[in-house]
Length: 446
Image (tube, rainbow, N blue to C red; front, side):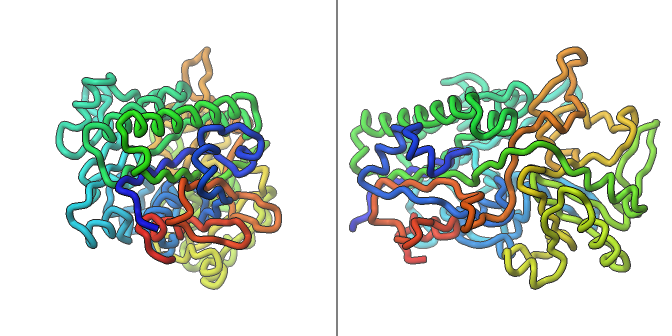
């Protein structure tokens, strides 16, 4: 079957196979009517940056190196979350592979992770500037000035709608506007669009909450808008639509304070600076960089066995990967990975907290501060209206993800939809592996 001129890949957070069956996604179901709808199996850990890197490269984390949404630098003793440079991904991605075959192919990447400085003709990704007078809302873009063109047409992209207590579908609506503009003005051969807002309600209220269902419907409307745009432009019949979701959510009812447990065991060290407690990464015998339902634990050599035993005894920890063989099985054995990797119970998630006295928590704990916290913090989606600060109450979080997909129970499987059977792989169990997608988009067998 001949490939179509345009391919639009929409990464829509929160979609699951049963949402099609329940009739919640009429626009997406319409796309699948003459194509295919499958369960999508994510890689481990099933978190945004990791799955996106695998979708776009066809590789596993042990090959591309994106082992979570955060990275720990053993040389500088520092943790960084949500870093955007393309070079962090240690594998070629779809736009690299496509251009190696045909340098004239035109690609656009809108709001996917690790896309700054990517080998794509058009890139837009959030990159606020922190100055002496405060934060400047801004997006990195290529070509230079492309974001400013979008800003002139649709107003400033608001980071407060993209993450934090005010996060809302307004972020996805702005991205949809940018996608429609790009498709009309630039006509890329491949367009990659991230639709994020389903993340917010699922984490705040749970995956089956009325708020989450309402956001799914809004996401489906956005997909419908983009399809309609191609129809208005007369290119719908020339366009392949692929819709995917990185992971499925689990409902949760509490957090596992793994760093507090490591501290109580004398393994995690702290420094007190102006009466606030900070992790001492240099002198800690072990500490955990947490991300949803996964924790990468970095351990000094002499303390591996002791740390492993302590973690296995923590209530709410479901599995511990400590050997190369265990990590190889889940294809997460990379030098950036923790010496030990802990996986929470299905109904739990890992908090990064290390303090016993909330008065000694660092100032950034009560702020939306995604880069300085040495762990992912979903509590940033909430606010204490009395103090106008982030509350230190992990019980507020109702949804999480990250655990390995489970074929027996169906846990972790999300959704894959293609408008055509011509560029996808048939699977007898109606499952698409996320590592197959890159090859399928390029028209190659995987």
